[in-house]
Amino acid sequence: MFAFPHPGLRRRPPRPPRLLLFTYASAHTPHHAPFSAHFRLPVLSLLDVSQCRVPPRHICATMTGLDAECRRYVFQCPQIRAIYDAGRRMVEAAAGRGGGAVALGVSCGSGTHRSVSFVERMAREMTARGWEVRVVHLDIGRGRGGGGRRGDRGPRRYY
Image (cartoon, rainbow, N blue to C red):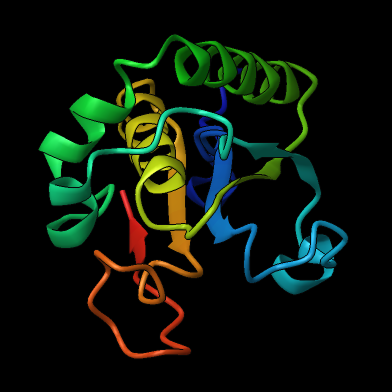
């Protein structure tokens, strides 16, 4: 006898890997900050891109890493591309282990240009690969190009 499965017992499609990417200013946030507790997720790593080339003054004064021109400039630096590739490999390895939701933090001096460019690029790339990505820029309003008021904790976006 052939039986049809009960409609209520259908299997859900597997949930895509989830990634939280966050940026912060190393000038404002101590490296020992309990980000895991704050976001309630395991933090894979805190990457520091503050040693990479700083964008020129006209970019810093008027743009953030949310702007395409700033991102293009930042990713001309070979150092940031190497750190980016290492970060992407870490994230992919965590998904391969079935880690569920994970977080990756990226810092630079002001949390406005280099780290934001890094995270925005990774968010777009991982979303295109089928990941569920959330982005939080903690200090983007504090930097010179960010515009926001002091203490503004920046945009939170879902891709």
